[in-house]
Length: 449
Image 1 (cartoon, helix red, strand yellow):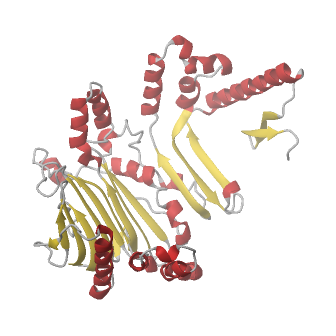
Image 2 (cartoon, helix red, strand yellow):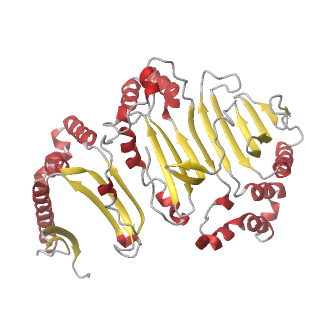
Image 3 (cartoon, helix red, strand yellow):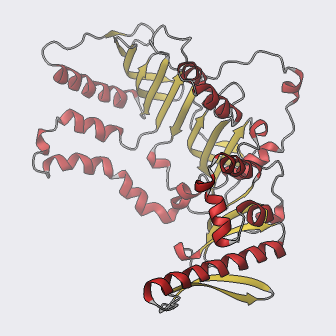
């Protein structure tokens, strides 16, 4: 259940993070069932309550490539530069200096966030919503310095009668405030990975949820992570159950979402780890429970081959290739068309005007592998070097469809210019050429090269 992105500078890492999502989903589908799961199908499973979590490393661990040294140095200057703005912008001196100080201290720090939905755990959260915002610091003094500034801002904002906080009984270094919605806790906290300043609402999972940001082995390579994240829609089940009960159509919607793996005990879950090795950036995304919802998610159960992976050239700046299924898309089109009245059936209108049926003449002739890339060899690595590709199942039939589409569109352009201008002027046209026994189609604009 993994995908490795080719060596690249970290400055392109953001672009490539999600490039392999569909690929690793297909790989996940191909994995055999875990023996433990096979022998314990009836064993009770722990409730999945954490909807969203993410963790990032401090900014000084980003951009490790020597070529990015200047950009890294510029980013590290941002906190100090931000503090200087208070003296340079008119009216900015009215902003509390403690607020500027807090922002300066937390900029670029490693961050954690979690959101948990658990109505059964409502002792410290009336609605079962539990969240944690956490920022890492190199030592206790820095974490407490943020706490001191926050305390000053709290007192200044609340006026002469501020809400009374108390020392947390469970975490003595933090303060807590009971609100009508639940317990609010804030302050510095010592964790297994160092001191952090945190804000808690309710009783969120803390250290057990977050793995420490340290070097680890991922996809067979030693990686220094810069971010981890997870999304588990199974946590939405209580809300969707309430929605289904309160809305007449809610039950149908909830059932469709459950079939697609968007909530429920069999919902998919997605996790990602992104980081770098000594020579490359690496991003691995896992989709669990994908096999159960493969058709609804348009995922193929056939993993990619080494030959298919080589479609993306070695000099690609970034790229993605995936194995997928068109069954769900075709079924959706069929259902939509059956529900449309004849006068509003856009698919029938397209068939009449273009002479092409989207399903029978187009989708049924496509293969189930596709992707895209940008590379130096296809145009210098910029936007104009973008290449998208898709496998073909029936080349002659697809070629006939494309010829018919090109002819229909050109005829439509002729009819439009004849009606509007009195003559056929193809300012825009689709031209067909042949190259090494391959048919190529190009969109041409009259008067432009």
